[in-house]
Length: 152
Image (cartoon, rainbow, N blue to C red; front, top):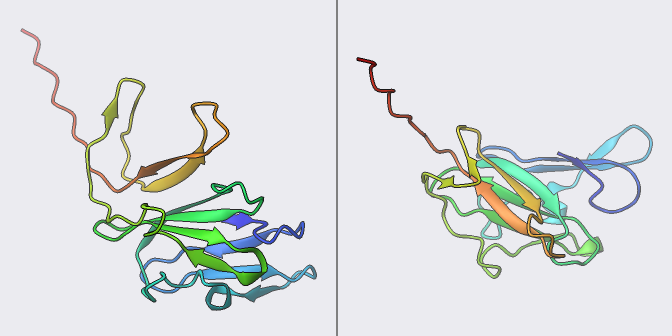
């Protein structure tokens, strides 16, 4: 995902990989990039594990003025929240922020929306018009519709 994580005015690239370390390519401002994943703390989880990344989004969840990122993972793996610490890199705050719970496939239904997809993802938003961002996580889930009744 392209984003200016270091607020230098140039787009950088985060590649959230599946079961291998993530890559964070810093824009060198001359058409080249430097891979900074390990140095910034985003290549692995806080426990040093490679996870099955499925969806990623950036947002300023803590009102620091810096973009942090959230990653959903394959089922039974904890979702991850990486807090942007500025020049110090990123800190995996998944467990301390209570978002590091393992994800399990569940059926989701609400009067306002339905989901009919197998594409996992994540998004920061503020649907309640508050200043704080809310978090929506969609993990790989199989939905089935009942067959329509046969007409008589």
